[in-house]
Length: 277
Image (tube, rainbow, N blue to C red):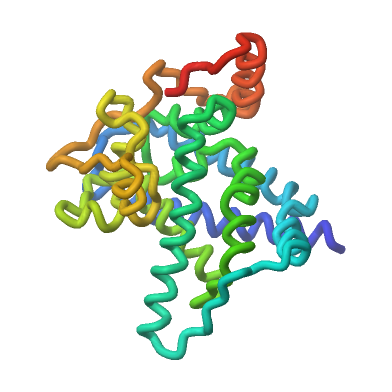
């Protein structure tokens, strides 16, 4: 039966996710940026990961993901098709180009999440993390799923058709990298920081220090932050504390679930922009 297959797929996906988290959590213990993080924060993020993934499965089953194919057919995309790579060099170039384009769309979506009061209401939960670690990767509200489809997947698939390797492998590489940059790891790339993102680079994005607010939006390549004026170069040994300037944490499943709706209600009630960060 279809529902049994769906349950099996969900359980298998969750087991893989927990396994990946477990490996990264062990690696974090080697050289943590923030030693002795409360274990209860990790436990909460893992519980939220189950909630997020379950609702993402439901939304995909409801047909949100099919919007990409329908819209592309309707509008006639993609408008830029690159030929399949013929050797490993072209494959590597194709992978870099693919993630450079993904990062461009993600950069502007992410920047809007920080500068637009409506989108910040949805993104605020992610930045309430005071113990930044690998499990913070999916500490995002489940409304992120349709927003990513609308702001990143849909426009990118309309404009480009770049598949240097199998799509599932590209998605897996993206998940691994997102987990890597969220790690509680004392690791930066020094003089290479303007070229590729690191856990130190992304920790600065999560910092509540005034000089770090609204900086380092990119996920893969800081070049977009450099080009658009939001780059903050990590200083040697700089691994700041993380969280909101207002110190809320929302480490409760119900609080986290209703947070965007509460923030939007305040927007309507006040009739103007709420404070961002």
